[in-house]
Length: 305
Image: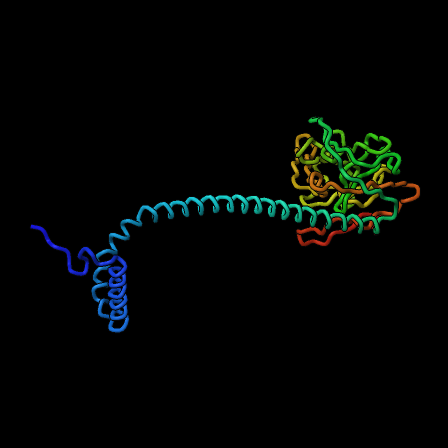
């Protein structure tokens, strides 16, 4: 059964007239909807029905966009994390350097104060390196004969004696430190003036006092100062502190062990003491023995101010 077209669209009616009629009807519907909101209910129902379908159709696009944002954000965060780690390492290095410079600055101030207090010439030196000799504890400093150093010149810092020049060059010198097995320093006990000699026992080993009888008046905590009797070391400079005493009654001898007071393997800067006993016979006042911790009053040896 065939349906005939509506009268409006029957053959013979011009196409322009058809278009005009459609436009007029559309405009009328739009005006009615705008004025009376008559189609809002129908529109809301249609939107409610079509919204899930719209979301389903947009799902692939949303998934692709979210994945792209995720990988982009992850890559960006990884890059930023790498930059922050590098910056953290740089700041940590700068902090360590700052701490090292602060320590060296304070050490140099102490050395300058020592130079003011001693009554003879001193030459600032800096440790360059340790020669590769496991049997000895020696270092090379950056000053030599041209700067006034001599064979036997003591090397010290603000805390006490570090060593002695044993080999001399024009602009450098080799220094034997207190721990060297061939090293010996004439000392006296600050508490009672007892004289002895401190000798080295090797790298990272305690110093020793040798050839002392059992009855020697020595105590743990006694401070040992340079005696000056050898004419090499100025008197009154701190050398070591007694940490252990082993008395052997059968052999009438004592094994006395000491720790160096100066920090031997700590700082790179020190002072070479250009000491002449015939001219500079005055005891050093800058490096008197540290205070005893036992509570007793410390006495000074003869010749000390």
